[in-house]
Amino acid sequence: MTLPRKIKKLREYLANYSSTPRNKNEKKLFENEQVQKTETTFTKMAGGDIPEFSNEFWTSRQRQASSLHEVSYRACFKPQLPRFFIQLLTNEEDTVYDPFSGRGTTAIEAALSGRRIIANDVNPLSEIFTRPRLSIPSLNDIHSRLERIKFDPEAQADIDLSMFYDPGTESEIVSLKNYISARESTKKLDVLDMWIRMVATNRLTGHSSGFFSVYTLPPNQAASPKNQEKINAKRKQKPQYRDIKSRILKKSQQLMAGVSRSEKINLSKANETAVFLTENAGTIPAIKTGTVNLTVTSPPFLNIVNYAADNWLRCWFNGYRAEEINKKITSPDSLKKWIDVMNGVFSELYRITRPGGWVAFEVGEVKKGKIKLDKHVVPLGLETGFKCAGVLINKQEFTKTSNIWGIKNNTSGTNTNRIVVFYKS
Ligand SMILES: C[S@@+](CC[C@H](N)C(=O)[O-])C[C@H]1O[C@@H](n2cnc3c(N)ncnc32)[C@H](O)[C@@H]1O
Image (spheres, rainbow, N blue to C red):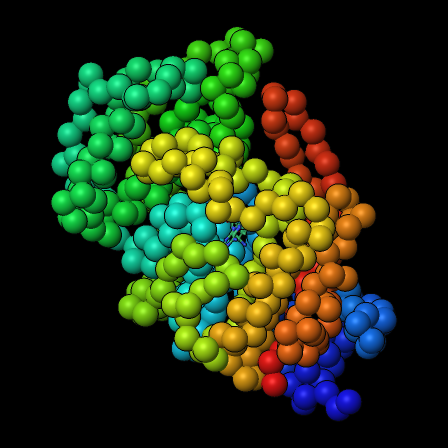
C-alpha cells in the first residue's frame, strides 16, 4: 500500500527533527538549543508497521506559553502540545477542533495563531473558561465594572462554605454569583461580565493568597467540605477575609500580560466564527461533514480523574449541578468500555475531518505506563478509515517544587505525552 505524500513528509520531518529546520523561523527556534536526535522504532499494529517517534519535541523555546493559558483545569495539557501540531499541520484560517476541550488549551492556542476554532466539552465550565479569553477587555474596563457591582455584606451561600471562606469573603462571592445570574437571566451578560465570571471561577479555591479561599488543594481540585475541615485542623488555620475584587483584577492582569497586539487581533477574529458545543464527543451533528482541518485532543483516560468532584464548587458558583454534568462525562471503569466510547468518537472525527486533514490524539501514560492507550487507539482510527502517520512520544525532563500539605519537595522526572497522529486522504 502506498502512503500519501503528506504522511511521508511528516514522518521524515519527525524522524529528522533535530537536523531539518524547514524555514527561517524554525532555524531561529532551534538556535542555541541542544535538540536531540529522534529515536524511531516500528511496532506491528493492526497489520502494519507503525512508527514511533521519540524526542523532546517541545524544545525550550517552544516552552514559553502564552500567559493567557494560565487557567487551571484538571488533566489539561500544556499549550506547547497543540501548538506543535497547529504550526506543523495547519495554515491561518484553517479550522482546529477539540472534542474534549477542557479549559480550551487547543482552542486558545489555535485562536492565538489565527485559526478558526470549534470547542466541545460536556462540561459547560469549558466554555465559561474559554470564550472570554477570545475578547480580552481592558483592565480599566474590568475595574470600572467591578466597582459597579454592589456587594451585599449580608449575603450568604445556600450551602455551608465556612471552612473555605471568612463571612466577608463569602458575602462578596455570593453577591457576585447573584449579579452574574441576574445578568444572565435578563440577557445582559456581556464580555466584561463573562471575563469576571471566568477569573472568579478560577480564583475560588487554591493554595496561595491570590485565591479567595483559605489554603486548600490547588485550584483545579476542590476539596470536599469535610476534607477542608481536616486540612484546616491539620494546619491550625481559619479562613481570613480576602477581598475578591483586587484578586480578580490581579489575575486579569497576569492573564493578559503576555498577549501581543497581533495575538489580540487573532483572538477577536477567531471569536467571530468560534463554535462552542456541550455535546457527547461521539455525536456532534452541529459540525458539518468534512469541515475540520485538524483535531488536537486528549480524551478522559478511563476513570482516573473525577471531574465532578474536582469542579463541585466551580459548578455551584455558576449555577450548575455537578452530579448532572457527571452523568454525561465518560468515565469508564474498563478498557473495553473506553474503547467502545472512543470508537464512536473516531467515527465522528472521520466524518467531520476534511480530506487532507489530521487528528492528533493524546493518550498519555495510564497507570504509570502499564496501559499504553495508543496501542488501542491506532486500530480504532484505522478501522474508521484514517491512515496512521505514527505515534509521537514527547519526553520532557522536569524538576518541580510541590508544596501540597505544607511539605516542600523537589521532584524530578520525565513528563511523557503519547500522541497518535492520523490523516484522512
Ligand atoms: C483530559 S480532559 C481534556 C483537557 C484539555 N485537553 C485541556 O487542556 O484542558 C478531558 C475532558 O473531556 C470532557 N469529557 C468527558 N467525557 C466527555 C464526552 N463524552 N464528550 C465530551 N467531553 C467529555 C471532560 O469534561 C474533560 O474536560
